[in-house]
Amino acid sequence: MNIAYSPCPNDTFVFHAWAHGLVPGAPKLNVTYADIDITNHLAARGEGPEVLKISYAALPWVLKDYALLPCGGALGRGCGPLVLSRSGLSAEADPALLSGKRVAVPSDRSTAYLLFRLWAAQKVPGGVSEIVVMPFDEIMPAVRDGNIDAGLVIHEARFTYPSYGLALLQDLGSWWEEDTGTPIPLGAIIARRSLDLGPIPGWIRSSIDYGWAHPEASKAYILEHAQEMDPDVAQQHINLYVNEFTRDLGTDGYKAISSLLGRAGAEGLIPEFDLGLLKFEA
Image (cartoon, rainbow, N blue to C red; front, side):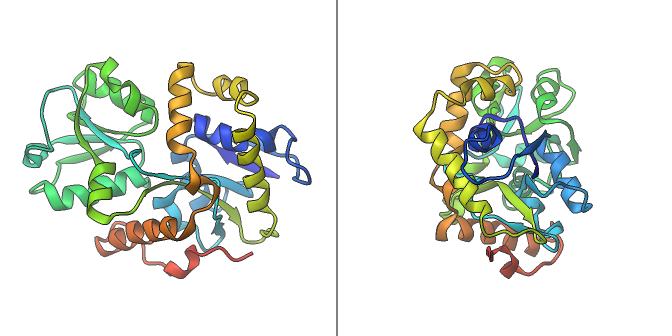
């Protein structure tokens, strides 16, 4: 089975056991490692593999061909995207200070992007002047070097941004949780509807359970793909993004996804789609 997911520690942790033939009955995986912005657009064009990781924000473009799986993705609390600046500016104190600024984002089809747009619509009078899409690993250096006014960052950047001399403007996860009471839906696992979908969630859950039961087994694989990340940072990343929602979205997970996409649809940030397509049917 062909699959695409990111080299980030949460994805390599989740799929380590399956990718290494440790899940009984699961087919062999042919893995492509790709940034989520790449997989978002592959899926939207219908060119993606059978199973792949995308942003929840990209679901409206792909649900005709792909089904959202009820496990394997990233939702959680206290793990939201951050808006950063090189100054001591505090947008939490005065969001108007972001008016007319240039902001870099890792994707215009990411949950981070939707959260930023929804927050800015509430909090930033007149909005920002320009949204610039760039690879996530280039954003913090660009802000540090003054090439961009502020940056929207994800994943391990929440642990490493102080080393770039950057300041936190807004934790969008904190805003989202306070505003909605739901967890933050970040990355989704989807599979082609033409597949026999029934056994796939079980294989993913078995892979997750193996990782939790044998935490040392996946470390070499995780660090091999973690782009020279410090082992402690990689473990923090896993602890934050691999949780009960990774194993099963549950009622709260589906509520969070519906809330995000419902609000984004009302703001015209995504195309119209049937929210009923979010439910998994084997």
